[in-house]
Length: 370
Image (tube, rainbow, N blue to C red; front, side):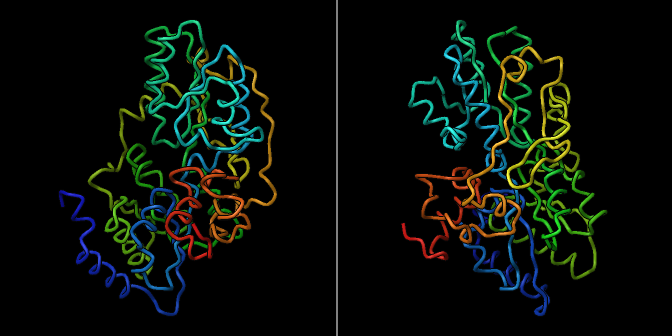
């Protein structure tokens, strides 16, 4: 298939839906986790739950980088932005993520120079255009966005741009999945693997899920037919008693990953010994930091950050939603105190957050009005 319309063709979708219905055991309940928040939004935007058998439950995973960032790291970034000689830059979804002192957007309203950018290269250009200011980029994302940060740092080093730094919050997907699999209160039958991350790291890193945990994985794209075919691949494995990694997203995802991107990341980054994830606690080797060769551009070296651990508001249940233990409408604050206009948790802010997906496409299930 060549065009996006083919991946939304009603006849093809109905055909795959019938195959899914024929592949399930009526006496069994299936729990399949879509790791990526992009999949969650696509599922609700296209109404895919309505074409699946009732005994297939889709569980939302931690594949939203803004959502897994703990409040303490937001506060650390805001502490850098407090410096009057600093211009803080960040992606748009970070601008509304709350820390204990408010969001970056609220701090901007109080006078801090915080600017939204579309790329770390935008932040580097701001540094070159403002030589008397220090420009810090609030880097966030899984391996999907880490290569662009790495390449920007390589350019900053090559051009000797010394008034630029990166506050690095890039996380890695595999340790997060492993933490979920090791959670005693989580039962899953398979995984719809993240499509965006896999364009960089490929499919091979997920083989431990099949080998060590005997769970099927299907790396899938984001169109309706992609996701349904991924679910079908998982069901076929379960019916055959198999567990392997399959690549449904072959038109985009190379099995071995994007080698030039991985090479750039290997030059610029090192694994952190541990990093805190919202809802999952501290996970070893689950995030990236800048290598010693890039210390001159490392905001955590150039600035003193508090590094204080901050717990989420008690009423918010972001952690349980991130782990797939609760659905967003089961959170006490969903749609009332916590909504897109006044988010309490990051899951309601991000364009990939599960709570934002539910609020936009399925809040009627929880009886929440517009």
